[in-house]
Length: 311
Image (cartoon, rainbow, N blue to C red; front, side, top):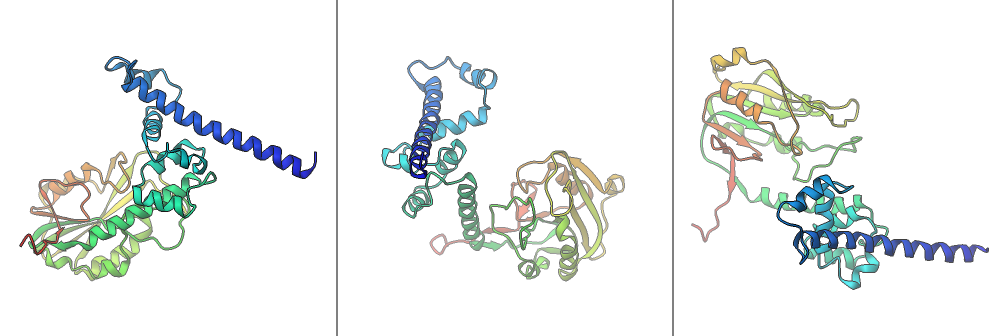
């Protein structure tokens, strides 16, 4: 055959395969929804048991396929020729808000060749923008604390091999240096500053600039699987412990080692075991910056700015 004939045949095969892959994805999602909610649905409890025990794909995959099949934007006939034949990419598209989805359709970003990484990047950037808007609306709380916990959103420069880019607003070393920790610090105060391996040197300088004296390092030994890194596989994260004034640790600290083991959680989530160490070794009241999980005894150092209407 000629080049043109081969091209025609290959393109026809591609489009046939693409269409069948898309239809198979949506059909599978519709069947799952029918088994769960349709007229012939399984009895209560049996659907989850089937998903866990009988299917050749994971329960998480089943949830994603159902979300794809129930997304009215993806199932519109006018979008059929634009969608990538990849169930995970379709799931990521289903997570976009209507405005972003419409914009990506209009500018041609959503297309059959769209890869899941492209959708992931859009989702991440949208979350970063949302978090940046949220951060700009925050103001420092008024109050003094005997213990401060800070988890900086370290801003990585350049491309570190294997680094999973976060979906929240980042803080440069200059921005962190401008942070006035003493506005919250009692005369005698403990500081726990989280730091990744790459930023150890920067964190030590920041602590000195904030007016605290570095005392020791606590190390979180993470359970496998280990993270990626630019030089070695990261299996640890650290907390720099520093003091202000003449304060010492509580007596229980004498029995606490400088390392602790705990499983990983979500990205940037810190283990509860760390907070138990803080409670045992340091004095309340406790204040926490960049708080991700509210705890009754750890006050958030930032709050939403009050609107004029509220005042």
